[in-house]
Length: 257
Image (spheres, rainbow, N blue to C red):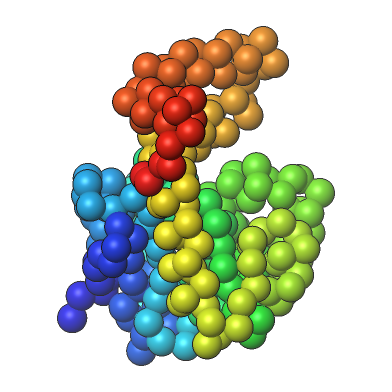
């Protein structure tokens, strides 16, 4: 059985966690398959927006228990190599050239909460629980902390990471961690409609450049950030998408991306 399923529907690429009997818990094999799936979506010209979803009652319960048992016998170098694999997955999602939407139909805990954190948009059902629970088992939320601080700021990130407490979808919305809370029976349609609107309304190259800009300017001094923005602006003006869009705007033509 494939741990990850890849499908495409009307320019929306679906990457589906398919380990429902283990609550889609992360293992070395699952992380490896996820990286491959996101690379596939990167190179798939028929896909403009990517949705990360899951089969079963949970979105992702974090690290697999059997996997955690194995880690106790790893050397430092083995643990470092394994940590870098998850780092590569988070970076692959965060810096993906296409918009990535998390469709959270159930609990997203620890590493599973990390997956939702690094996506560009997150939709969740009211029943979903979130939590960075690593500190409760003597572990640390090391990799996700880098992205969470960027996303919601140090003050709130400290509360969530140091307490390890669970919080509901409405709290996640208030914290700025997720974007929308949707009823379970409406979740799939809502995500597809949102993705389709992005596809129809926005130029793919523009969304890619905007993601890159948001990533890059945060760590730069103001002058350097503005210069990077100016360079990206110039690059965007030279793209076919920009020329098409400006021409359509000036000629009052309807655009269909």
